[in-house]
Length: 224
Image (cartoon, rainbow, N blue to C red):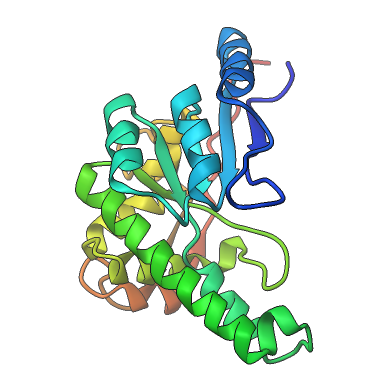
């Protein structure tokens, strides 16, 4: 049936430029929505984020440089922010095993530190504005994979979310974005894949690192 999600890359060669116009992106969004698909957009810089928001994408990935106007529009039209704050921890870890100047030089480390603070402020602004925040992954130098999800929950708490809000971002918000309303919820008749931890992640997000058991319970197939 084709793709459920289309992803656009909205960062240009220069942070002050976007490779697509708002009209271009809007045309893609309208085409995708007309076929029952959604559109997400990689956006690490404000200009590209603005193009995606104005064009009506369903979500922004990363969103490291949002401002008050951007998050207000996102909240008003229901645009999700898919947060990847934990990539900065991954970069710090990657810097221990690479010689790439981008990660190990003094200039590179200072640039990453500035980007991290700006990204945290972006999430803080989005949260205060009422933007729905989900958690995501990334790939590249210092990758952020699904098994790093606890990092992201902790980072969201650092950015101002309550632990239960950060946990919701890692569970039900992703389901809402993907059009799977039962995902991430513990309800009668719902999906039964879950994991148990030592501690209470609703008050202490570090409990997510202390996994005790993972359960994969598959519902029986219906029909022939």
